[in-house]
Length: 104
Image 1 (cartoon, helix red, strand yellow):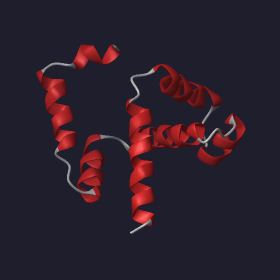
Image 2 (tube, rainbow, N blue to C red):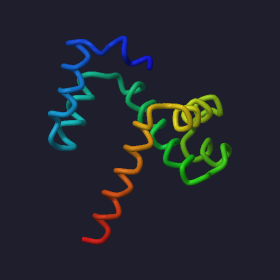
Image 3 (cartoon, helix red, strand yellow):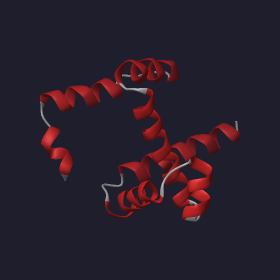
Image 4 (cartoon, helix red, strand yellow):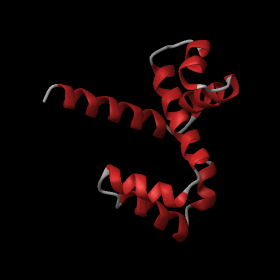
């Protein structure tokens, strides 16, 4: 697990700061201050790629929909297949939230 390298007081404090975000506006403001637009776009793109991979879309469909390279798509696929299931879990949680919003 590569993340162990940052599991210390500083890493814990950073991740607790994410857990303290309460609204979408909080998230936008925090990440706007913390990251470049390019870095944010890259994270968002990877999340979208993951969603499309889980829908069994082809690499060419994913590339067309997201502008991602096949290298990025392959990387996200490997994360979904061999990672810690964190990305997979978040995609499922967001799907569940979206479903709940549709039914209310």
